[in-house]
Image 1 (cartoon, rainbow, N blue to C red):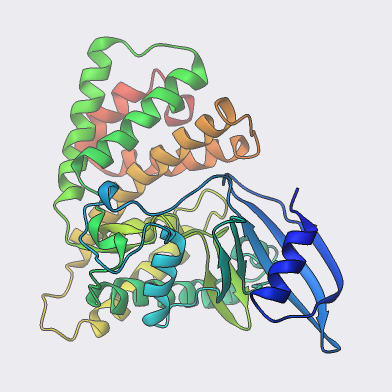
Image 2: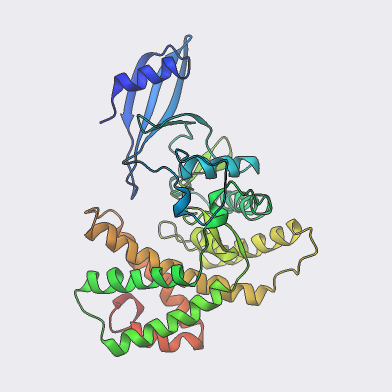
Length: 357
């Protein structure tokens, strides 16, 4: 449990806040190892709040572990802080950081409220849904545009990439957990060879795509609706990846299933805004080609997510994500059925994954 006296001391000595009426409430976590708290207090007769992030263990950036040369990055800088600062420079809506105390392992952050995009969309009409998703796409395009063009050598994300090995690792993660750990059935060697061969083809296609700054978990539980804007959380794993990755995370979200007509409209909105944003004479995206890449990226992303949900249940003993596996695999089935060239993969997976039959 968070140490109350440590919090009060940091507020007073590091932030100059003489807080009274202090209350600290634990917030419900998701799959993260970090803990989060909401701090309520009074300062100069004004009520105020902050979010406190408590690290589970040291997460300091190690130069030797990242493929980036950045002389100004210290070994005590967190990836969260490093990436937050880069995104903020491009006017991406990320929380303010008030204080990081390495000794206590605490970050004091701007409070974005409790309204995730997932919560905000419950029982809303399609007009409201479209408006919020367009706002989310506008923030995404800042990430893929200004935050990508500003290739700050001090930002660690530019030294990390969704390459062929990582894409295949995520596919293999699904085989290990999404199939074998979930069903208790070992994949036959011949089937494994066939499946991995098809996964390799998809991974090679995706790895060849141009790379942009990629959040890596851009979905409705990491997006907050606050002050009529979409704010972005949980960006510490950002790297360079295909344009379609974060778009697939958002529109093929495990937690919010969009009507297909709305998803199609939002892809078109994204492409139109992206084309308008490209002021460097670059070739505008071919819509049919992009849609195929989007579908392949969605397939890869959803299989990885399904495997991860099983991993979190089996290894971390948290079962709250298990109910979302069927609808996540539902996306996969639709994409497998959409392309004749994926029939071989569909037939090889069918005996092991009930939702794909």
